Image 1: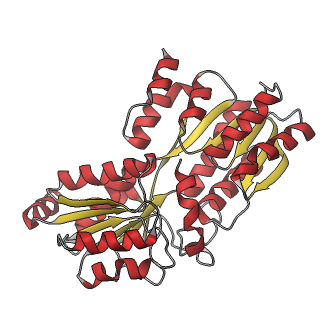
Image 2: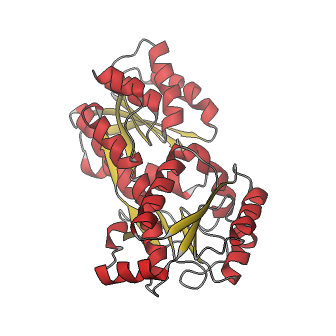
Image 3: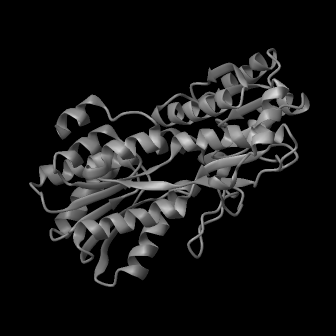
Length: 352
């Protein structure tokens, strides 16, 4: 769900990312992580924000299930703080359109803009008019190349990537009784989000579960090849107990490969919520767990950080939200926590 819409951001992140080390997530520019839960406002600060009669605009890269959840979190937090949202835009993953969106919303003179840039490499030109106008900028997932934290923008809010990968490993261990042979399908591209999540899965398995062995590894540069990769992996290793897949959409292709092979033994663990994968999971299929981020909380944190900045409060450069393992038993609660919405009807029906 999420990764499919953010892979296009890779160009702007090449050469700028840093890999996770020693169990820590790093931001797109090598920033250390700070928990989103540390962003707080006192009752007095909240009243001062309400008295300030500030306004905000939400300038999105595109609308998706992930963006909808982030947007809802920001909308709700701004409403709680008495900040009117005067504009919301969807660039359809078009950088030129996002530039026009910023120019359009500036006519409404927002105090704050919360946004996810389409292309970090060229995004400075998109946001420069807002920066020049003194608008407080808070970003989701990345920031424009050349922008300085604290000077040009308030913060970046994203996932705790290492935690997500590590929780995927724990979920796999739980599904396999902490022993067995595992296949590892990782994202074979220079993209800091997937790289850190994948590496964390592998590191956690290797360090924490001595009776689990990764016996097959294959990189995936093109998601369209994921079924072919899975078919080859299962053919060469028919006794695989589990397969880790770098994100949910290619995991569906792996699921298809297992079904085609008549394999009901091998379990799948992947990252990000996806309705077809979750439906297989609740029906007792091959999918054992989905690891999700707290997307709604990303929006809440970005809005709260930007509101605090209106009072002169500084925010850490890279704020990260928690993640959660969603299983058959926790899918309803997990969907609500991650996306702040109920499970799709197909899943609700399957749970009856």
